[in-house]
Length: 409
Figure 1 (cartoon, one colour):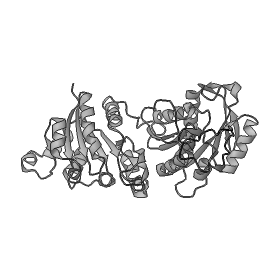
Figure 2 (cartoon, rainbow, N blue to C red; figure 1 turned 90 degrees about the vertical axis):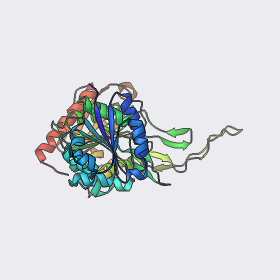
Figure 3 (cartoon, one colour; figure 1 turned 180 degrees about the vertical axis):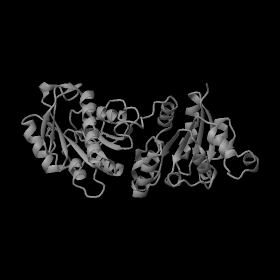
Figure 4 (cartoon, one colour; figure 1 turned 120 degrees about the vertical axis):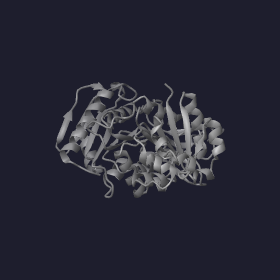
C-alpha cells in the first residue's frame, strides 16, 4: 500500500532542502502532501512544492473551501506520517505548548499519527534552555527527531549544531518510522537522554596531516546502539570513523577535540553521559594553512603542541546541567586499574570503564574487550566479551543506577 506523508515546511532557510525531501520521499513510493507556513512561503513557493509533490499545497487555516469540511482535521488524520522540516525554534515552542493558531500547528495538535521533526536553527537557539525544554517535552509526548547536524550555518561565520539533516537522512528516518522501526519508547531508559562520545579526534597539523590515535569507535557506537534499544533518546557525538550510524540514534560528526566539547555542551541536558571517545590529548598550537613541504636538507619541522580541552572533566565538574551519571573510559597500557582509579577522582567522574589497549590485546579496532568498572564503591572486573555485550551490560547497570537513585535532569 502507498504510504501517505504530510510534510509541514517551516519558515527557515533550510526550507530549500525540503523541496529535495519531497522528491526523496516520492522515490521511496510515498505520496506527499505539503503544508507551508506563512513564514515558509518567504523561502519556497506553493508552486514549487506542488510541482514536486504533484499534489495541492495547503497554506491557510481559514480557507473557506477546505474548512467547510474541517480541512485541518482531515489533513491531520488522512496520513500515515507527518514530517516537520525544517522544524524551527518557533514551531517547536508552539508544539510543546499546544498552540494552534495556524494550519500547521492546528494539524499537529489534531493528529494522532506519528510525527517526525527535523530541527533547523542557529546553534545558540538550539542550545538555549527554552529550546532544550521544548525538545524534552516533545520527546516525552512521543515526537521523533532526526538531527540537527553540526556544520556551517547560513549566517557568515556561524557554525555548530543546528543544521537540518539532509533530505536522504530525513527520508531514511521516515522510512524507519513507517516500518515501525523507530527507537522504542519503552524500556529501562524510556524518557531518558543518553549522550555518548565515540571514535578518535583528528587534530590538524596542516590541511593534509593530523594527530590522531587508533580508536575505531566500535565500543562507543555499540554503547549508543544499546542505549537506543533500552528506549533512550541518544545523541552520539562521533569523531572520524568508518562505521555505519547506529539505528535510531542522532549522530553528530566532528573532527577535533574542541568541536567535540562544544557539541557535547550543546547537547545537554542529559541523564547519562558516556565518554568513550579517545580524544587526542594535544593539538598543534598553530596548524599550518598550507601543506608543509620537506626542505632541501630534509630537516624535520618542529611542532609546538597545546593541551586539548578535557571533555570528561569539563562535563563532570560543571554545576549547571551536569548529567546525573557521568561515565568515562580509561584506555591504558599498564597499571590499568590504578590509573583508572586516579582518573575517576581527578576528573570527578562517577564511573570509569578501564581497559588494556596494549597492541597484544587487539582492543583497538577489534570486536572484543576486557574491561574493569571502577566506581566509588570499588572495582568490578568483567570477563572478556564482545564490545556489543560490554555495551549492553554497561547500559543495564546505568539504567539500574538511575532507577535506584530516582534522578531527574
